[in-house]
Image (cartoon, rainbow, N blue to C red; front, side, top):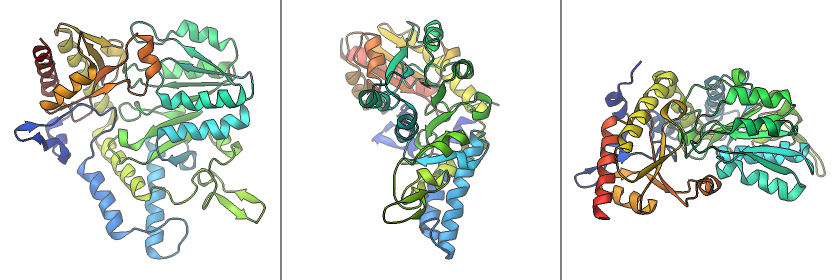
Amino acid sequence: MALDVARLRSAFPILVREVRPGVPLVYLDSTATTQKPLSVLAAMDEFYRHSNANIHRGVHTLAEEATTLYEDARRKVAEFIHAPAARQVIFTRNASEAINLVAYSWGRANLASGDLVVLTEMEHHSNLVPWQMLSAERGVELDFIPVTADGLLDLDVYQALLTRTPRLVAFTHMSNVLGTINPLADMVRQAHAVGAVVLVDAAQSVPHLPVDVQALDADFLVFSAHKMLGPTGIGALYAKAGLLEAMPPFLGGGDMIKTVHLRTFVPNDPPHKFEAGTPAIAEAVGFAAAIDYLKAVGMESVAAHEREIVAYALERLEEVPGVRVFGPTAEHKGGVVAFTLEGIHPHDVAQILDRDGIAVRAGHHCAQPLHEKFGILATTRASFYLYNTKEEVDRLVEGIYQVKKLFG
């Protein structure tokens, strides 16, 4: 069903802001972080006002309420991605920490010198650097699926890499620069056929597309709350139960143990084994509220709206002389458009657009190797979500024409 965007926008108080008198905000930076609806803000406020206490450690009323809210959030996250059980969801600070958890715990327990890890050229630094660190430490070999000129993965090269029997394949479901939506189910199936474990960076897909971890058969999958209407400071790692049970703890401290003696300890069961110390309780409450909001809207409707917006944005940008858009066509793309404007640095483009209240991002977007692949240092990126409109795309295009006029 088509989204009633005007009604949705009324739930986001920041969207009525004027960045300067008479200059309304046009927020086109949701790939970096999304804005928050009133229900998320209210849920976190309600927790702090009425139920604030530490979890898993007390029998008083507030502690039991806080524990229930926290574990209910875990259950909602698990249901949202169709995980078999809530205990297969680990709360982390963000998707980056979730990938690091896998690299430090599973990676150091299972990967040795000469083992192959297959990545792609479109990865965010969060799915590159942890494996580079492990490579430097253990001698693990890294190789990469190339990106084609039209922003897709070269799957012929992927097939060749699989003949070398990698131990791990780790890739993004949706590129944060190109918007490319990769054929996840096929890639996972092919990796499993050669015995590889698969990690999926779903930071850009879970907020925008229906994702079913059981149907996809992912071994590990990571995402962040702040990219899906929730608060910063909390994310999630999903993993198959057998992997979590075999993995050693990531951090040591309170709540991740069953027993502790002066010289030994026994770790707790998952998920608590991987959640040392006091967690982000209020943020988990906000995460749950964000999921409630998205479920009420419907993820199929979110995805359809974004397809319509990005197709319109690509059409409008094509008419602007000097604009070069990166990535595939709309049918293979999420709500992200990265572009350059001939003769003008992306930072200048973004800064001048901001004068008109248009918030876009400029830089390498934590994907320097991908930009190197295309022979550029940076791009300007406009990204869209359920609260964006075609009129805001028009504002973007008008702003780009103003940039061109300013630079002559």
